[in-house]
Length: 262
Image (cartoon, rainbow, N blue to C red; front, side, top):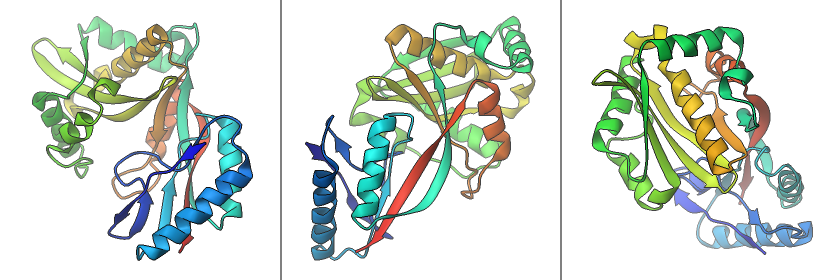
């Protein structure tokens, strides 16, 4: 009726360490008492395995609002406490086109990019080396630490390549921006990683990436485009990024990380 995945790490056990979210995944109508029982068993088992803490990174509330509430009460009853609550942004997919849900200023920037001759390429499966290299170059150019170690993207995708989508923006022969997205479920597309070369900031290639992602969702019957939380490479909230997400139609919901001393 419910499954849970966790692994040991440097600072204790986590669920899970190499994904944006984990925690309990219950079937519909699973009673809270059974979820509490499962969590209690997990704590006992992790303790026997030598664990000291168990951290659970849950999915944003927008994925399944009712399940989120049920699981939240279960975590609290089983002795877990929220140690971080982040503001997560997502775009509900509607019949409206992308340029109708974004603010006028972003609409003008999107049009400017299209008028500059930018074009989008999309493919599913393993991210090619050139795209991964570009994403690392974008991090370097923006003064960020590498968000994913070299070669790790391909290793992550190898487990379920059919769930991953890579998009690139080209200006003539040059690739100037890229995004990597993953189908987190049948109704959610998660924005995993993206970047653009700063010298092309004035034509806002990121807007074309998000428009392509939004249209992919419409064509594929996906209901939510998850934009994720907005943190810089030091782990602090990046207000400029959160503001951008709101300007392109992003709504807010909580994403909670729970922790228990075991």
